Amino acid sequence: GDLSSDVCSSDLLNIRAGAYKADLDFSGVPITNLEIADGASEAKVLFASPNPVRMQTFKYTTGASNVEIKGLSNANIDIFTFLGGAGSAILDFSGNLMGNMSVEISSGVGTIRIRVPEGTHCVLHTQGELVDIDNDGWGKDGKLYETPGEGYTIDIVVNMSVGSLQLELD
Image 1 (cartoon, one colour):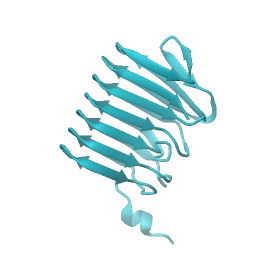
Image 2 (cartoon, one colour; image 1 turned 45 degrees about the horizontal axis):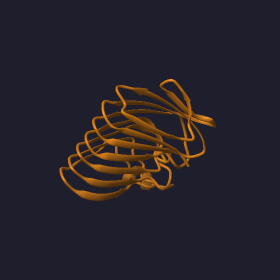
Image 3 (tube, rainbow, N blue to C red; image 1 turned 120 degrees about the vertical axis):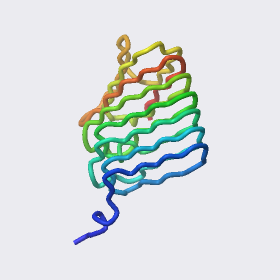
């Protein structure tokens, strides 16, 4: 049999850093819980191929950083939490969605860009005092935004006090 998944799997992968620049590639790595906390960073996180196990939680906490997380559907996440400060973030949900995903995003004065591939069902609820919502192709009903799609659903709650939220459909 294949022992690599047993050798490489991690119950909790915890990355803590201050000011740094990094490209983190977790493509195909079996991770069940992931926590990343940083200060003023330039970080790119990539899931180019599917996580072979279900990730229970992925929590990303950042200060004044520029963060790009790509391939979030490939990460095979149950609950994804993103806590941002004054920076900018691109949260790209491309990949193969293998189950429903619950997403909580809290941000201070930053810019959050949420990118969902066409055909992926996503429901987004906004809370807080959002200054600016730039909506490209999502349906809107009050504080609820939605993309049409079949299969599993990405359910996102965004709580921003001041800042910019950009919704994109790829």
